[in-house]
Length: 86
Image 1 (cartoon, rainbow, N blue to C red):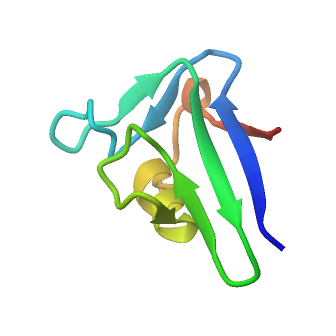
Image 2: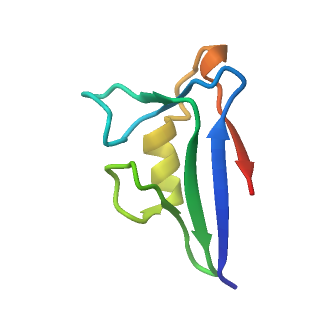
């Protein structure tokens, strides 16, 4: 079954670093106060639609998370991300 989910990304400090954005300079992230993406899932795929990314459109969710959020990095507390699915 196909499903669309709006994802609102922010934190208490309103400082969310996201890489692979059109506004990025070199390999530095853009620090958004919030960011909104769309997740599309069906029986075989989970993809992200992000109008601000330089990644493929749509992008496989695993690739998007790995490259845009760099979860392997330890961030300062002010940059921790929260995602709310609407």
